[in-house]
Length: 105
Image (cartoon, rainbow, N blue to C red):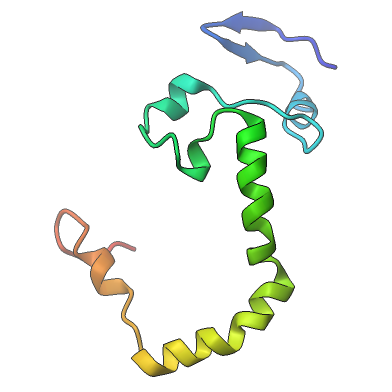
């Protein structure tokens, strides 16, 4: 494990860039910072679960629905729905969300 150079304001700072891979990898099961993720005020959202165990339970339920085989099985239904509704314009709704009303690039 890499030793931190400084610890300040709840943050660790490392001089060695390889420390990133040591901290952020699939083996480490870190909880999220409640101050940062609590600011969204969406504690039931999948993205805002603080505890790793809670996020893992949700991920275990949702992951099979987004597997490659699941998407391929749903391809016919998706194509059917797209064909039923015709060409869908996704740009206009997002354009309406910009401050100027102009298309954001």
